[in-house]
Amino acid sequence: MLNKGALSGIRVLDMTRVVAGPYAGQILGDLGAEVVKIERKGEGDDCRRVGPPWMDNELGRQGQDSTYYQSVNRNKSSISVDFATEAGADLIRQLVANADVLVENYRSGTLARYGLGYEELKAINPKLIYCSVTGFGQTGPYAGRSGYDYLVQAMAGLMSVTGHHDGEPGDGPMRVGVPIADICAGLYAAISVLAALNYRNVSGEGQYIDVSLFDSQLSAMLNTFSGWFNGGTALGRTGNDHPSAAPYGVFPVDDGFILIATFNDREFVRLSAVLGHADWATDPRFCSMGARVANREELKALVTEALKGKTKAEWVEILNAGTVSCGGINEMADLEKDPQVLARELIVSQEHPTNGTIRSAASPMRFSASPVTYRQAPPLLGEHNEQILSSWLGFDEAQIKALQAQGAI
Image 1: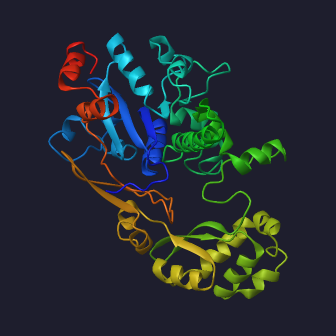
Image 2: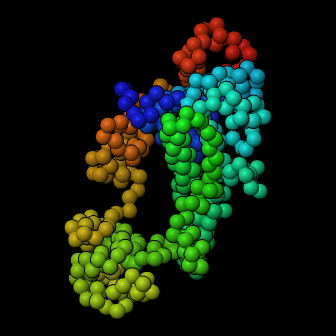
Image 3: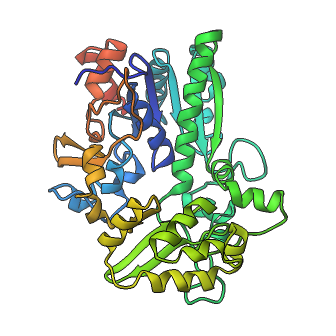
């Protein structure tokens, strides 16, 4: 597939595993960079074995390929290297000399012990952009700790605002159902690399980037953070209710549930009219956002009553026709046939050498001149050893066999 991506010609060494780092590498690969994933010899990325579910093939049932791994590793080649050997560490240094970017997510100080820290690699390639993704960053009292998504969701305050209202059945802290701290860190890492590439274009200098899951999740707390630090108010857990808007949440209808989102007075006027209760818009209990939040439960009961008699599909059509934000609550199976998903081609299919067809969520980035491309399915461990060592370093068969004999690859 022709690569016209915005990062075409940029070479990235991806020394990451699990989610945050690999997600950053995948974003750079989607944008056209040549991404080489350096995996631990014999084991590979830990995420390959995070299951079930597994890929349904002769390898997957032994835990060889998890479906999790497939979600963050397309558009990459894989080489397996043991950098604990001097030959393996030297091989990475040689690759660095030909790279633009290195992304790693080992615990702080780990790679430096093998001569692969930023200062050592900067001496080899002064223009290198070296991005470290860790749980808690390179400084501070938590710098030496390992950090996982679930842990960071707890420590950065996300779980304090996620879950049912206090006193409701099942109340208590709740994690978000996707690895949101990992996702945020991966996004910030990719954005940081793009900014550093532009800085290098202007200055000619590479640089070091320090991104952490904790910092990224804290930054993503947005209104919850501002509510406390600027308003002295802890928003707490509000279940499916928005802490600052009403009616904004899940409502029952005849065959299930819909999500109605009214985020301003204008939308509430339209909702009231569509539901046949235009008088709500001038009712002192509901005529402003603050009043609606204060009288949330009363308003919720009235809206629920007004929704009786029609199905999800009917209300979604009626409310959207009335310019009221509304949608169904989809399962993954629903997304497979959702007309918007199909129209936007949001499911990408790629052929894998052993796993058959791999499907992943498309990149949300759309460019008119430098489109995202999907060039490679997530790789097998060490699938591209010979190809990369030949194309990047000019190694011949004898040199590659010598590395194998030394235990480096």
